[in-house]
Length: 518
Image 1 (cartoon, one colour):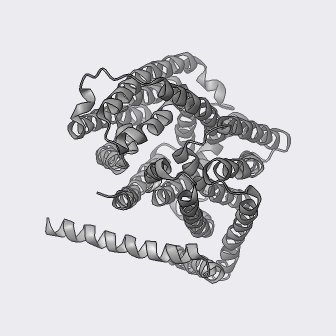
Image 2: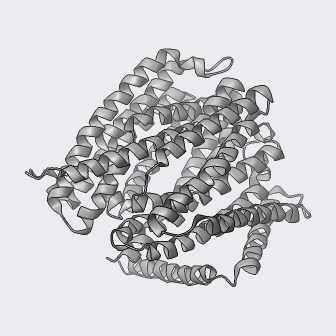
């Protein structure tokens, strides 16, 4: 199976699974809204974010080992693969123990993260979250081999099958028992089961990884890993602070109910982000294989331009749809209590747009291993984010919007030029300024398309809320796609995108045909 086929399989299968997962998540969130309320929804989001901070114990070691696995997998060097996997197993066992230990230490003090009253048995709930997170490190280290070998869709299928059983059981437990502890306990059990299942799957596909070997990691590989870990560690610290701090800040300075209200928006944009990211990242592992042979960077630069334009189109269209649908859908789904003001919703969508647009640079930095100074960049971005968010939420009393504005400002001021500089200088050997001007121009165009689509679709409002939602979906897609086409049809990347979509459609038809024959 060639790289293109692997990439399409990753994108298509992962996308289909993500679509199904979105349905499952919405069913679970609906049950939480109906049977538990905003406080428990907020606790769910807060615990998830605190565990995200504890995941710093991983220090980016897994990502560093993936980088080292690209070459032995490309050359089928089994002894090297075995030695890296054994190292990964030992490291993740230690990390799991560290997370479990830190979680036990934090548990008695976890209520300090909440302004005002929390919920009954919060300590027990938090410990179950810790147990769920730690168990993944004890059993799931073999997933890395599938990811590095362009078979991440197998991971997705594994998790989806168990979620398909787990989530309905959680919903039934909420319906009959209204007990959040039972709800989380079911998740812990299924996390354990899914990790055992994927471990056996990898053992069957790669039976040699359990063989003994006299191979040792070379000094060159050790030096390379240390350098990658040093940079990825800073990158991970920054990423965790940026991504996991929002709910913690809102809970501590605004209140747990507001976390619950924001969580409903968060689950929507996070689901769309995951879906969009899957569509865009199916070829990420193949970039690592391209980088091995791309000495002058020309092939990578061409691929990067295509990936950037693809991300721009996806984030612009998805952002337009979300901005148009967010509040009408929230009013219908969760009720008026959970509806946020328009300004906050605008900021959520801009944050989503920028998150998607940072993806291409991050993918190629990782694929080409040009991680020098990335750790420093992420820490600086995280500090800027934290300082501005705290300033807005405490001094200016800007509520949820203030926390999210800190993330946006930090992304523009620090990340938007720094990450691109890394790949232009160290991977593609291209000047930075011409690309930066083009990048910021595209940012401005994309955000303006999103807002123009929103204001244009507001001219007509249907009295029936269901008909209105259908109208908003159709109108936002037509307007945003039309504007992208009119403005960019002349670009080579646009023509490539049309051809790529044609290939993807034919591939899906081929997969469907094979499935029907079976």
